[in-house]
Image (cartoon, rainbow, N blue to C red):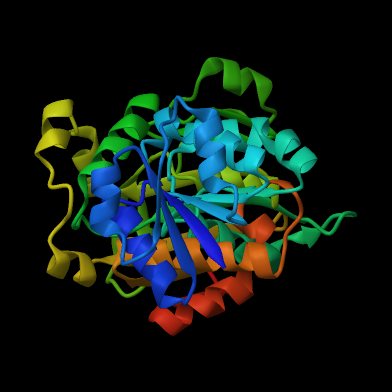
Length: 367
């Protein structure tokens, strides 16, 4: 299987190329700099140079590949031309974004084009958006009542990224700076809206539109119990992918997100100068030792609760594993054409079980 990796010379791109090779597939390296791509290529591996302002050349670069993995962010700025080129080439598409507003734009706006081309577009196949979406689906199924269409119906879902501060690349810093600047979304009664940063007073317009009053649009908890840690840790609102993805396969009245306050503070300090000072490639030992943890909690309409979590080491390496396994499944097993979330494209339990072969653990329990 030939897999096109766009942004192959970047940090995440290089890890993804290595994972494609490890799986026995053939990488096709695509990007803007031939010199940088050649530095990654092994032997006779194909190198194809195309810029984002060359849609025809970019589509041609993907032309003989059934699937494209895009690793080049910030996706808010750089992602959409790559998706359109993949669709034009008749190739499935995945990316490693965690950018909430970009995700919403893709899932809302590009599904029709993907359907007409007969391909599947699955953004957010990274260590946060992928596992977070998958575990949230399973947690909601545990407490939700099934609607007439089989979709779980719940009162609320909270998704939280509870990793500690750790090794980060310059690309991640740049993307998270974009995310923080755009602000976080929450989801209430069928609508996405700006999340309240302090969990207190809500936007009067949102309150007026909600039968439940301010509590229906408050940001979320001030602290969360973390699996494997004593007590609770303080958390803050942050723009996680799950707020945009989860309502598309779980019928929830409210979906919110949170991260540790210490991580939120770190992201809030990402000025352009700080971003430029972050190493392009983080220290390998620190990367391999970094633990990521995605947690989801769901509350049913009857008040019944459940929680689940997914955790593992090496978030960047796991992002490559997730993206490449997603690519394999799209080509080998297929998925409905359109723009889908990870939990819409793949069987959640099966995908998480695959990740356990890479040291990941996951669990769903009553809260």
